[in-house]
Image (cartoon, rainbow, N blue to C red; front, side, top):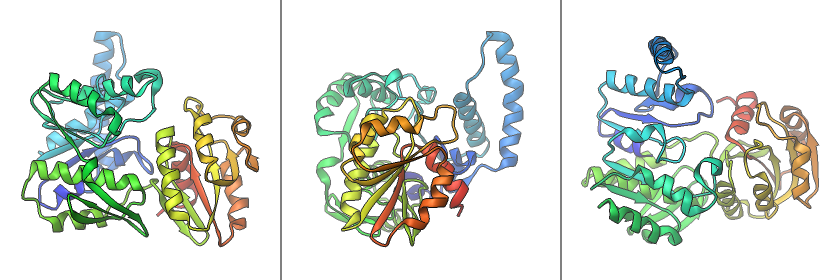
Length: 360
């Protein structure tokens, strides 16, 4: 959202994100243009030579994420970008991106994810996320109200200004889009989800922090034209098939809340698969609140979970398929007018579903 808004000024805005949903190129882009395959090859060759020297000198290898980050930084430097929007990888404090001396830091919210690395409580995870804060700078967040005192205490020590957007967000409604008011101005964002009102408000606040006179017309245009594959995305309207890459309990809670607002009288059939290192027990327990039927499947990943494991955590009728493609081939024909097939559990999973069946 930030990149799309700022690009309307004519500046060159770099964006680095992970993971990708459709192709690797999504990780690195400037003004809605993904890095090309030829450019990836060019920088991969440079980094290949460098990585061999690094391995020889330090007796260690450069991990995949760090190589991708180096590729992005070389690409952005060569193209002389004006502003960089950089998504931290794992946590923040110890993440490879954190060496950058950023001007503005953002934490959307804090949820239970990557707990083996970040800790088992929201406070421990917050400590890692807050590690992106820089001395005498500004941090914007939409974290849970209960965490605000912790944020303030941490940031006061760094003399970092805290901007908390939640009190200014009101009147959230879901239709074909998400509408809301922020600081008494009305907005619409093309992405579905109550949480998208919070994401959009952070983006608005961030852009206005950088450019105080940023035109509302630019904000409205950018929010109306956001496309983010795999995030509460209808890949079919007849039959109704909705996909979301929710891969932790925090994300699943947000999607369940959104489905309640969206579904009307429709019944929700859930096609679910998750990686073994995720808390799929709690994810399924949350989905139990909305699901009328489950399809549990495997996915093409070394970290896949046996779908028979999922059955242990639900009392709702279900059917097991070892292959998600077989499940879709058979069950798509059985979706009724008053039903929605909701596919979730992993970004890897919905990426595979999308690539196999719903290329756009």
